[in-house]
Image 1 (cartoon, rainbow, N blue to C red):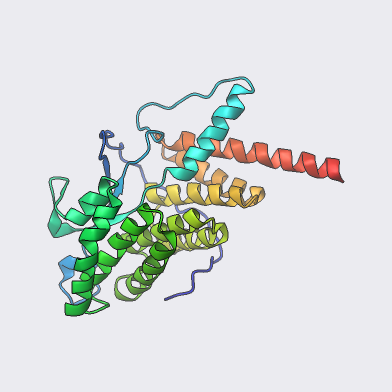
Image 2 (cartoon, one colour):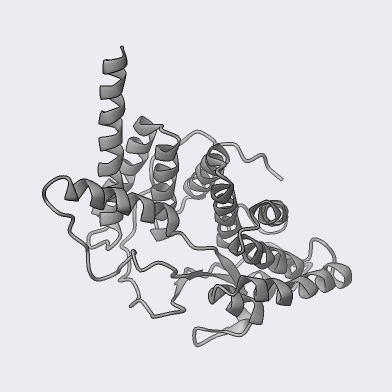
Length: 295
């Protein structure tokens, strides 16, 4: 597996026009993200690589049609922005792999994935574990079906707060996807985001920073555009940098992301970047003031 260290940051690719977001669903909402086929291999059934990333919408904070307006005066505005920052940190969901042949009419037919999507993570672990072990024994450790179950088992473990176990299996998952699929494949990047969440659960912010930086640079180097996922990763990196109190870096990342969202036109997520950027600037000003007082 390639070492997960940040590579030199580049400019955000030219954004493409972002399609209108889907209407949010109640309960088990799903966000389907750009299916991307992999045709690099002929030793396995190609269809096994044609996976769709599925993001369960687990937070009511991210809205598609209504942009909340913060209070205009302090201290109410400051409290609103602070709460926003906390929610922005926690909103990103775990990412399941779903095989294309098991996906029809937006209905997931994989019982383990369904349990993950419903946040019934212990049940998901019970379903996926024997399937993973069977695939490992019958098909081999590096077979795409085995890798598929590994990722979703990592989600089930992480969803239960078993972050160290999730980190271990997801790290192997990403290594195999780097080798067998492609670092820039959406399925690989989805598993990398799962590792970020496992690190977040353990407070390993520097490691989360490194993996997010690598994800962003992999996508930029692949010649892709600033699609919704790419911008979300930049938002999340800005939040992680702020938690590390690297406010200058956080401001730079978030400002680039904000400008890219502006170029997209009607982007319902732009207020998330805007309010996070405002919080970072307030924290930066407060830090500078404290340094002057102590100096």
